[in-house]
Amino acid sequence: MKNRILIISREFGSGGRTVGKAVAQRLRIPCYDSELIQKIAEESGFTEGYVARREESAPAGFMSSALASRAFGPTNEDYLWEVQRKVILDLAGQGPCVIVGRCADYILQNEADCLKAFIHASLEYRAERIVRVYGEREESPEQRIREKDKRRAAYHRFYTNMKWGYAKNYHVSLDSQALGIEGCADVLQMLYEKSGKMSE
Amino acid sequence: MKNRILIISREFGSGGRTVGKAVAQRLRIPCYDSELIQKIAEESGFTEGYVARREESAPAGFMSSALASRAFGPTNEDYLWEVQRKVILDLAGQGPCVIVGRCADYILQNEADCLKAFIHASLEYRAERIVRVYGEREESPEQRIREKDKRRAAYHRFYTNMKWGYAKNYHVSLDSQALGIEGCADVLQMLYEKSGKMSE
Image (cartoon, rainbow over all chains, first blue to last red; front, side, top):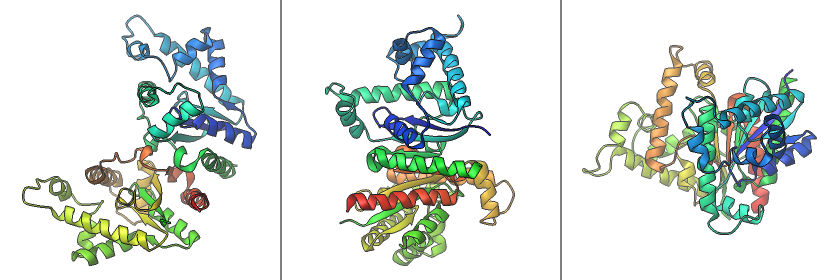
């Protein structure tokens, strides 16, 4: 039987990572988030800082590079995508787990028994949250979130051809502002445990 | 305190109406679906058949009429929208309930304590389901669903300016094919009961 993997895609600042950690703790299974960056860095030979910057929350140079002509062979982004794909497939093969972000839903769609979740919240809530929880500077957090949203959407569209934030891409989408972090974790825990019973 | 209303938007054939009825039965509150058509017909003076046809699953003439120039005053669609708005506001004022479809999420956004849900499923699942459950004819159900999807999306966009099927429009979006009708009902019951506790 394929391993059951809870995959969480999330808007920047929505608390999706915190939801993932909470569910993993309750289910007593590992949660891969920043651990993914470490593993991708190890496998690729790039530094963790470089991997983190060239991923979903990539800096401004990302788009021009990612969308550049392949006339001179694969770009760094293409190479990182291949390493990322391999790391995620390896982890999913090791046992049930939670994976946050990194297009894992797309990479694992035919390779694991996936429960695909999307966590979102309003711009205002996320702006307040990244200042309060991440300790980000208080100047115009909305503008920074808008830019991250744009890049994340473009990154997903480029590598997966899926529309970011579209409900049909996921088994369950949750508003962390309305339902709370714990409320989202309750739903995902219930669905994960239920799907286990269904497939056993 | 405002009444708690569970509002279910759904793709045609996804079983969203069945989910709504199941949750309402468990919560022992009314569920308004075809009852809405009756009430809108009573209030507007149109027949139920006319109201049903001119609503979300409107026939081909709908778009040209709905998008027609208002130079000669409001169209029948505008008049029906106003009646629908009044009927939904009245029902929401009477007590906790489940309302299926009819842009109730938009109409009640500032008028009730809403839990907004969206039920979706793949085209293949819905095609199989409308033949099996609704007894629809077996010729090309996919094509009929595609047309209904298009009209429902256009109807919502026109009256609410919201993108149909976009996760951020809802507190919770669920795939009825992956999670099952009962699985969707479990999630909505839990969230409804929890939100009750939160606001009490």
